[in-house]
Image (cartoon, rainbow, N blue to C red; front, side):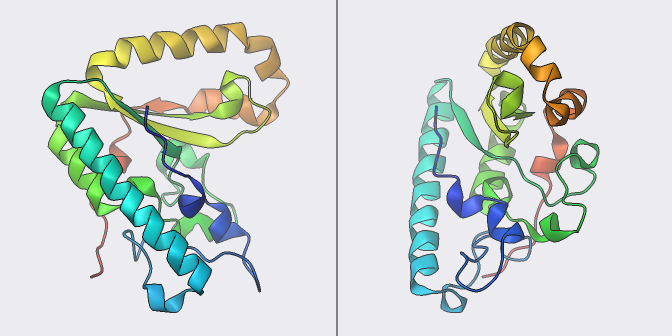
Length: 192
């Protein structure tokens, strides 16, 4: 299970803006990172580190894929496309429209294209699995473990059904959760 730090890709960087707040590091216009010279030194360092981690993660994924070793990659779900999951992830004020995420980086999109049908994806709200937070999450995993991932998720959902009913937001996430979302594979614009 690979789970790179989510903070650089967090939707919070797009929603919680203002003086002294962390800047958005990944956008739909700059899916591989905004120009470092537009960022504070702290944000530029966070961007640089997240890019290094991403390249390492993709190298590990590629090695696993080539060797036939099962893998799972987790990270915050993309929120840029208002049609994705019937709009469940879109910000009603439109602030998420520019959200660049781990899933829109060219390195990960290139890997997903290379893996093709041998990789599967699922998006879910963490509260579905008992968390007190909704936090939408995406997983990319080897299709060879798809049945195991689906069975584990089903077992957790069955165990936590009563708790889920108390979470209004989770009831909607249950209705909109998806597997093998094609919107994650759509090409994004690239800036060099």
